[in-house]
Image (cartoon, rainbow, N blue to C red; front, side, top):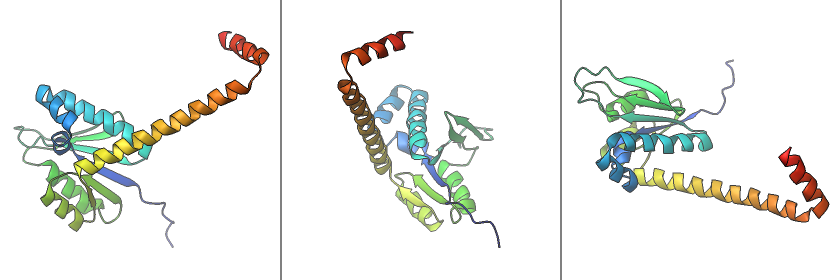
Length: 175
């Protein structure tokens, strides 16, 4: 008998330029500076990865860059892939789905309808750009509520302390 396997890791592949062109804020940024829009997407997805525990891979099309052999790396813990010449983000994601889509839990963020159908046929699940944006906003709201609740607990606790104890805490904090 083989080893029992832990719950499969969840992967989220993000079609970078599709998301940038679908989210209003990023689309506006990209008109001014595409590099800044990419960095902002990476920042957002890095935060999301930290709080969700989902492995994020952002794939950017570089298929029109002559002689490009493709690059992979990590930025802020997020895996970043620039496809090679003549390979689109969709093709890269499909190739990886063929390898792991039926073994691991894989979601793909894209609003490309045709790509969504291919993803489903290869063992992945799809999430539209809009759904991903809402999921991230919901998570941020939950985190903010949790932080406010923790802050309130601290204020309530401090409110229960007598004047002498508060002075001792202040003195201790200063030293």
